Image (cartoon, rainbow, N blue to C red; front, top):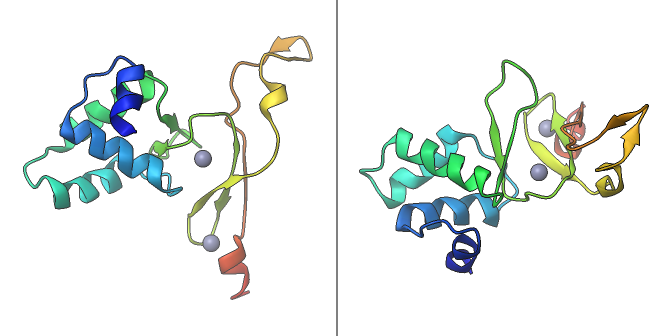
Length: 134
Ligand SMILES: [Zn+2]
Ligand SMILES: [Zn+2]
């Protein structure tokens, strides 16, 4: 499955690349490069952070994952779901959730005369878990 995805994207399938794609796609965690690197160290203790970084970059370029940056200062997170969707960011625990809101019909539409090609909008607040402690 993962190998097929890589092949379809004309990316060479290496063990590390497969494992990185598998990690990002299999959960909805939206990990940072650091987090992916920490996970990969458990599988390949010799892997470097640069290798992880280069791999996520080519996966992003191939459209298999999506790099998302919420603010100028923040680190990019990597989304296993490359299709356009909105996010909810929790101000308390920092967890990033996918929101099941339809925004596909915004792409390629014109708003105030501007052509929309991508949506990076996100909602923020208190997530359902943190809300329990309020
Ligand atoms: Zn939270
Ligand atoms: Zn997402």
